[in-house]
Image 1 (tube, rainbow, N blue to C red):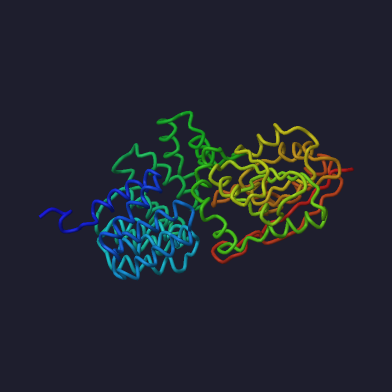
Image 2: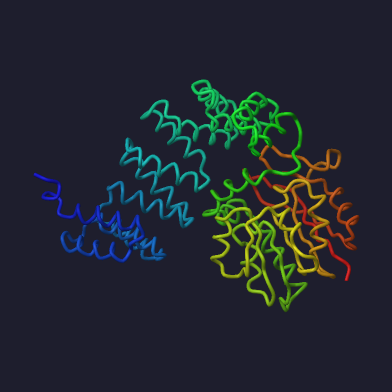
Amino acid sequence: MSATATDPNIKHLTKAREQIAKGDLKNAALTLNKANAAWPQDARVFMLGGLLAEKAGNVKGAFESLRKAVSLAPTWGPGLLELALLLARQNQFKEAVETAEKVALIEPKNLQVLAGVVDIAHRAGHSEMAIRHLRRGLLLVPGDVMLRRLLARDLSELGQHDESLAVWSALIEENPTDTQSLVGRVQACIAAGKPTDAEKDTAALLQLAPEDAVYQYYAQLARGETPAQQPAELMRPLFDGMAEFYDMHMVRGLKYQLPKQIADKIIARHPDKRINVLDLGCGTGLLGVCLGRLDGALIGVDLSKKMVEQAARHNVYDRFHTVNLHDALRETPEGLYQVIAALDVFIYAGDLTEAIPNAYRVLAADGVLIFSCETSSETGPDLVLLPAGRYAHKRSHLEALCKATGFDAVDVEETVLRHENNLPVHGFVVTAHKPA
């Protein structure tokens, strides 16, 4: 007996899934209507209906359909998994994690479920959960390269550096030209605070691709040098990958309040909002959300196209430039902006000896540059690259640079920028005024 004879919906469901994948949503809806008529109350129809609704931008409808699917089949793994994934995509992490754990118990040997559960753990910033399921996955498929890479990264994220390095080393021993694992071990050495241990790996990477900007950057670190800047090729994929859940991670997870604080400061200075603002490293537009629409122009600059796509959804920015902030400042005509903001972005920009004079030039008379930095020791160098991959700056150096540039008032406020691992990250906010 054929599958179609025993399951009258299979042809409709297969067709609908293909139509959804192609973006043919109108016909997919018609196909699902046929499936529902052929076999009413089929959980699979409601699951696909949820995927269709989300793709059409109807998140409320997506939740209704997926919750209906789960109510019809409470122990059906695919329906629960799709609900968990939707919850994670909508930053509802508590329920997403609970639902994902439930699916993992129902289908402990399903590798597709495992992949979804690990993805949800990563989106939720729950490295311990990800590690637990990755170890379980390696019992199912011992030696799987992808699972081992993910495990090594998560171990490093939790500070379990020795085990992380051991996993990377085993992968490299099996395949000495595996660039992903070579880069992984380099990053693990940096995270462990031992960048010079990566010198052999960076040499191997440069032998494979001598012109690669990321490999050159890592080679500098391995030689004990502090690169002046981080390459765009390193930062862009990092922030593209974070874009979907960046807001929730920063605001709720890391208690990031700078955009609100700085927006309040800008509005207090310009209550009529008749200003042009340049938001360097705008990310997902948190500053723009706090500022609201201006009676002027709000321009966002960010390397990450995915971040800019998220920022555009707020409908408060007038224009975006997906470029390096150093290039953006260098190429912007003078005297255009009353405010330039650079919040939590100079920690990736590195050396600011050109950026601050260029910001001064781009500011209109009586304008202000407002930026934040992580704090480095006053007894150390002006610029420090931290194991986490961010730059810290010496307060006195930046004060002196602002004054030497021509700013006539430089106010520096010590603050907690955000929290990481439940500990405060100390920094400072500089407000530098250009003479009228």
